[in-house]
Length: 191
Image 1 (cartoon, one colour):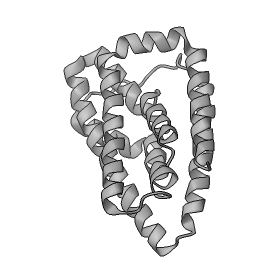
Image 2 (image 1 turned 60 degrees about the vertical axis):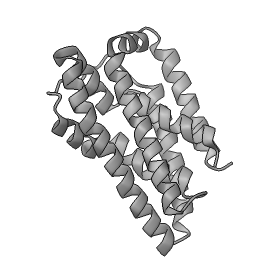
Image 3 (image 1 turned 90 degrees about the vertical axis):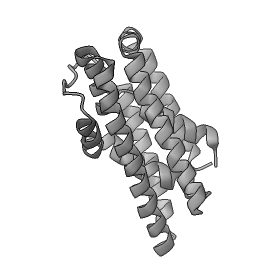
Image 4 (image 1 turned 180 degrees about the vertical axis):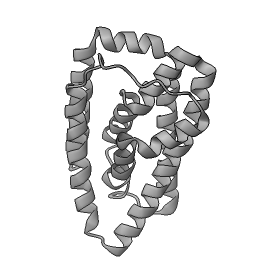
């Protein structure tokens, strides 16, 4: 497995602005870091749960239909290219959603967040399963990816204001760099 490509994909998808990160940022600004952490805990648990569900579904699929892995890799690569395009053309001037930062809202948001759903359904078959199918390896991978997601959420809580200002100030450069890294990750699935 190309660990560099895997980590780049995980970090870009979890650290770049998305619905969950924007709500965390908004919660920090409107309700403070304590409320944002409550939301973050809910989001992290749901993120990990979605990864577990993905790992179970993908393990069953690959056992039943071994050729399905190539289809999942293709879908995952196209999704990463789509995300790269979305990051490239992102417009942060649109207002963010203001929600109350509760554990339950953070938990439920993950099940409604297409970025998280698609990520959790592509990262396991795209990076893990072509190389590791044993339950301990898949379990460790799910734990590592969940930790990366939690670190991304914490980053948005701790450095929300600074990070938002940096993104706005260097918006185009950051978007281009992130999009290029994501496109690289999509290509590296096939290497």
